[in-house]
Image 1: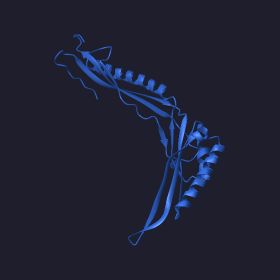
Image 2: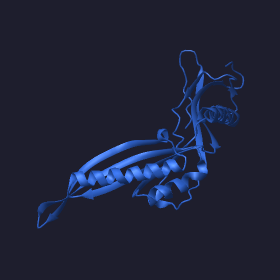
Image 3: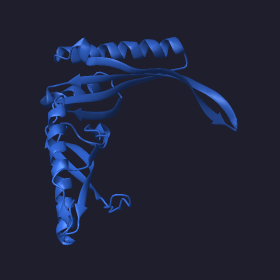
Image 4: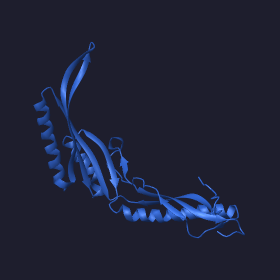
Length: 217
């Protein structure tokens, strides 16, 4: 959208244009959300089975080279589960869910990590997401493209309407960057999982002064 307002006091005319720039980059970090869900009518039993299973999972991941720092608990919950029989709520079991996040920079190992975790008791593979450790460098490149894109828009408008366009913008407003994370729901994808590419996008809103062909800007 483009606006051409007029300031009545000094007759300075401004046009507002938007610019957008995008850069594609290969992700270098993967985050896997893995969970163990257990249930039993006795809370202590459900907890014990869950803890034993999760210990087996973490031990197996460590054998692959995943360190303690790369494994983080992000959720642990205990929830009573009920059935409804003839309109009555009947206790079924206690559900214990332990969810961890596993981080790796070895992109080729994602499928192996997931398969190993599942084979040792993980029964909830919620999500695999990817990010870029050096995203700022790519964002700066995208920002450069966004500013140039805004200038192209302004020049196109000025040329079409036969206007003079100021060389330097009056204002430049950077819009909040979009998230550069790419998520893949692992339950909908077969391992091995390919990370693909991340798109880093920058957007700006720029104002340029302009004037008629024989007027001063």
